Length: 314
Ligand code: TXA
Ligand code: MG
Image (cartoon, rainbow, N blue to C red; front, side, top):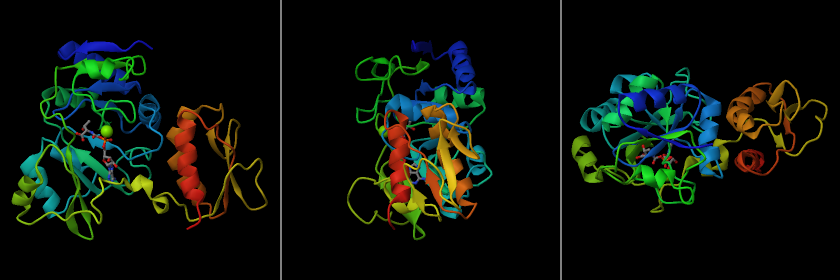
């Protein structure tokens, strides 16, 4: 595909909104870095983000919203979260909060967790795009996995080190003001915790809270909950590379029809988009789960990574 470079004027923003509502990925400027945005309510659109980035596993993504009110419709805010929202939104703060289960956020966005990372960006073009698309937008940084985060449209569109040719469009609003990703705060054992240092200094957040931020257990950079096997483990046991169901098993199929088909046509994008929802549904049958082999390339690697974690002994 040819990646369109759209001017960040009214027309360009309207065009980007149409693409997003059609399930395409569009790189958008934010004050921190360019993000690769997709409709957070559309699992296949979000799966395309992982595919374009070549992300080897499903890390949960940040959901971007146009206002504090819109954010409150997606997650539960306690008094501290309210205070931080009032102090730093719109801006370079992301908060990890309990997800409202019926907010319509696709399971692939949170990687099946019951929390969600939310941010109200300050960049006027990001805000205009959120309003025009009228959808919450999931967006990781708009770089291929393992590459440097992009702070200009040129970084994004570079064919060799960026995503040129792999995404529908980039909205070009010049360089990002902040240039490093947002600061991420979550609540661990009831304490506000610095999960990732970023665009807003921790000290400013501590001033607003009137208390120090807790640090995650280790000094290691944020280890995504996606790295923890238990977060993906269903209640039921899981058997991989199954050709057929054994008596009593629920079979997840790939490349053919079935009660729990990841993709009848064998499409890895569709399978990635459905994975977390189908695992939840299969688990609700209360029976052991068997999964047919998934090709181990492209998004198949991310799917197999998650399935292996779910099947690992616990
Ligand atoms: O500035 C930014 O934050 C940029 C712009 C585009 O907004 N976005 C960004 O996204 O940096 P990304 O995907 O590169 O980083 C998201 C981080 C990941 O480290 C992920 O593990 C964490 O947020 N995260 C997302 N949801 C989470 C959750 N439910 N619990 C804990 N961490 C979460
Ligand atoms: Mg990133």
